[in-house]
Structures are given as C-alpha cells and as structure tokens.
Image (cartoon, rainbow, N blue to C red; front, top):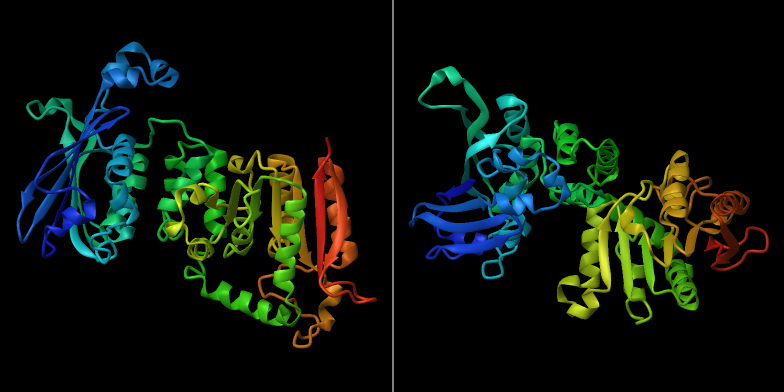
Length: 468
C-alpha cells in the first residue's frame, strides 16, 4: 500500500519540514496492523517526493479480535487489504504524519498554511461506486484528477477490469488539507473500515471535516460511508453539521450578538454574577467532574479550573469558532501537563445523545436553553436528563418579565438576537418541574441579579438533583 506526495514548490525540501520527516533517511514505524515506512525517492531544489509505504501483517489482523476471526479462515489471509488504499492508510496518516495532519510545524510555523503545488498518487484505490463517485468526492474540493482503471490480469484480458483505480490528485493547497481529505475520503471510497465505529467517530468526522464537509455536495454519502452505514450515527453527524457555524464560520456574527447582550446587562454586572453563582453551587455540592454545556468562550471553565476540587471539566459547544476562542482564553497550548489533563473541549450538539457526556457529577447550562428551538427542548431533555444523567444539573435562563427594566431594550425585544424564546417565571417553572418529575430529579428554583418586587430578578435558575 503506497502513497506518494510530490511538490514543485521552491524550495522543494520544505516538504520535509511539513511532514516532520528528514529527507535523508528512511524512517520506520510500528503500527498495530503492520509497519509504515517514510522515505524520499526524489529530493532536489525544484521537486521533492515523499512516500508512505504501508506493510500490512495478516497475522496481526487475524489476532486482532473476534471481528477479524468471524470473517472465515480463508478470507483472513486472502484479501485485498495489504494492497489497496483503505482505512489502514488513514490510520497510518493519523499516526505517522500526526503533526502534518494537524498543521503543526514549530521550526517553520508559516509553512502549514502556505498553499503549495501538490500531487498525491495512489497506485491502487478501491472505489465502490466507480470513477464517477471518485470525481464527485474530490472535484468539489478543487482537485484535478487523473485515473486509470486496473485490469485483473495484465496478461489476460479475458479476466476483465478490477474495481480498483490508479489515482493522481493535483491541487495547490496547504499540505494539511490534502492529508485531511485523504484521511476522511479513502475509507469512503473503500466503503469499509477495519475497526469498530462508535460515537467518537462522529466527532472525528466533524473535526477533520471542519471547513469543507458541511458544504460538500456529497456530505450525506461521505457521512454514511465513513460511519459504516450506521443510520443513527449518520443522522447525528448530519444534524451536528447543520447546527454548526457553517453560516458564521469566523464567529463574528455570534461575537456581535454576545457583545450586544453583554452591553445590555453590563450595568448590573449580570454575566459575572451568573458565573459566580453557578461556580459557588458547584463548589458547595462538592462535585469533582463537571460538564459546561454550551461553553462558549470558556469563561465558566476558566473559573472552575482555579479550584483543585474540580479534577475534570469538559466544555461542549456546537460552534467551532467558539471552541477556538475558548482554547485561546484557556491558553491550552501553554498549560502544564497536569493542568491540561483536567480540561477538555468537545464539539457536540446538546440535543443528541452523546455517550462522551456520561458519568459526570454535574452539568451546567448557563444561558443556553433559550438558544434551542422550543420544539427541540424534549430532545435536549432526553439527551441530558434521561441519557447522560449527571447527579446535579444547573440551568440558568433570562426572566422575560424583567426586560422592561433594561433601558435600551426595545419593547417586546429579546436580549440576544439568537434567542429562540425567553420565558416568564411561571413558564420556566412549569418546564423545569416537568423535567424533574419525568426524569427522577428534585428541583430548586431561585434567581440571580437585582430583585424587582413586581418583575422578579433578570436571571432565573433551576437546580436539579438526581434522586437516589
């Protein structure tokens, strides 16, 4: 199994920096299913070619577990896996070329984002769907494609043609983009994966598909094949794609909306008061592991990390741009290793069951539910209260009755242009009491912010505790 990447960028030797592999020596890597070798068959001032050669060990595959052993004795040894570009090659790219795939180059930090002319060649690509599918997958991404269908027997035409193609993909782009597209699309072409598919594969698909998958015309085919036609996982992936920040990729619109709300509430320092109140409740409950649902820029996470009581804090957010801002706010790349192990950021939707959110002591949804369409609140309830079931859940949301006290808020307007609704105290109480009763939680209702005798406080809060 072979992948070569050639560039005519000048100086061509920059390819070695991007791949983090020195051009003057062969490098070998042990993988769970064989060995990978990196070498450079061409190295000059005007052109450079790097090769990734993957040797599959069928004995290791047979010993890989019940899934491999269930296929029958002959098929375990006689198959096309050692020769064709498949999910084995994707795994090799992720493990052997990890830094290049992530766009990291410490010695030349300007290189990973630099578009350079690249040609990737794959001598044997399985394509269940034919050349038409191959072109549908890569041409929308800007690749020029050269293909040649392979014969079953070069010396005997009567055998006919094989379902394999020799493929060359040409494009000027950052190397990480090419590797990302290969990582996702090779298993899609093969329509198979050699390992178990679970919820974490949805997260991987969306992470590596960030910036291109949401707008790809074949995104449904890609999601279905990447997830081995698991209907539930495919629906989850497509829904999360639809809910992500495809319409606001830089997050500028969301920033403007947040700033408007912050400006409105700033005179009473309401956001800080909310975060302080939620953090105090979590500390008083003596919980150790906390989910921040809809974590935004990570303000609550930053506050919790100051206390050693919290051994694991996880932020969940559907908008990639917000997660990037949270990463910068928390300075994750500069954190000491022990501190970094306490915090994690996850891209995810709050209205779908996500097993990564199981087993936490507590969850906080601070000014989140009002951003969810009312008809999807039952799905939020099922995912969190019936599914993940943390011992403590804290929910805050605006009190609509208080809005007339905001001097610059027009009559009838909501505080944030992305709010789907804002509830009165009675409406929030009715929803919260129903959630608690249906899912085995007790409920305490209170308020945050200055109290108005007639209108209540600006923020209402529900504290749900799971019954023993």
